[in-house]
Length: 327
Ligand code: FAD
Image 1: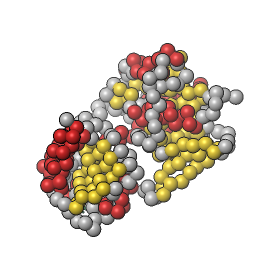
Image 2: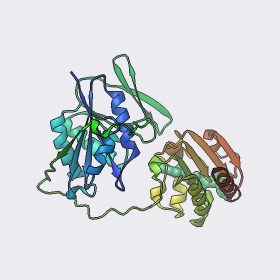
Image 3: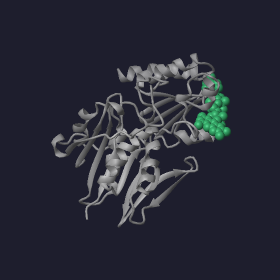
Image 4: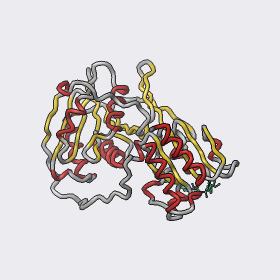
């Protein structure tokens, strides 16, 4: 019998986040031939994104669009999603491993009495088995979990790991359904406003290139050369906890065990020693470039390319060269 795999779409700034398309691909990999993919779009004024999602090859898009869902609220979004999941009776529910996905997924798993596998970086089939790969011990090892039993499964996928489904298909291919939102009688939490600490052009979690600064930048002003390099490379700026603790930047930039986990194509670590807690957030980056004046700094052990030197000399030179090369 064909099964239904649900993708919970995520938007930001009126656009679908890339991790949504990665979740579509993950659903495809988790499902079998003839299974159906259903995407869920929740928010206010999100209906116009349904066609783009339909073009990614899903069979159905369910839109729960209400002014009451303008700002993410776990109770409201949870109620909206769970009511739909009760009807769709999914085999798998897939979220991005983002702040919202990490918040909503366990609630959905509890509601469905489902198992959950979080922070998945790859999905593959081995005969009849579906195997989910995820990092453990702060990225020092990987485990593979095999799906067993007949119940539903909730999965979160780490951004930038699974190739996104192309969104170039025919928009008319999927059935788009507007779903009613039945607000819970009362909400214990009311979200009045969301204050974004950083208004960087590039979303750190989904950035292809990250330029990161550590305590070696020495001051808030010390981030300026890094921001300039990031501007030329269309990169996001990140930081070590050392830099955040020193007050050089906001904690919203922190990468690591207790910060954000990033998996860009290129990670440029400037004045970062490479403590294990920092590596937990970036060691899966495809190419790591380290700039440090201490040739013995542990970051060089994980770096693909290392530059031993003063970041205040090296970063402006790199910026200049990249600017010329990209012009
Ligand atoms: P430092 O270790 O002080 O390193 C600065 C580096 O800059 C040095 O290697 C130095 O040689 C180099 N340098 C100095 N000046 C220059 C220059 N002009 N040019 C080039 N290089 C220069 N850390 C995180 O990053 N993320 C986390 O999520 C995190 N979570 C933690 C959780 C726990 C429970 C604990 C205990 C710690 C955590 N830490 C985390 C902190 C971590 O252990 C380190 O203290 C921190 O990563 C160090 O930051 P840093 O590399 O910027 O600073």
